[in-house]
Length: 98
Image (cartoon, rainbow, N blue to C red):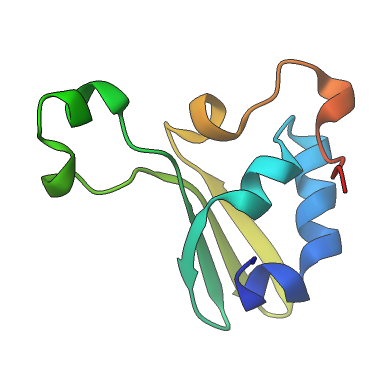
């Protein structure tokens, strides 16, 4: 279930995803933290580190930050955005499969 922030600003987030070749499905199915003015989308952990027994001490990478400022959303991508949220086929960006 998506974070309430994501649900409230769904259409704006979907538009951003479509404009930036980001998977809406990945954004809305990822672990999310936040409050009424901010959402942080987290990526998956590194499975190789898990095999080494190190995953418990490694936080999930932040893949996208979304801020509500003066009634508008501001998005900040990180070095992990493309790896975890990007799509190879631009036609699939911004489209949510039901």
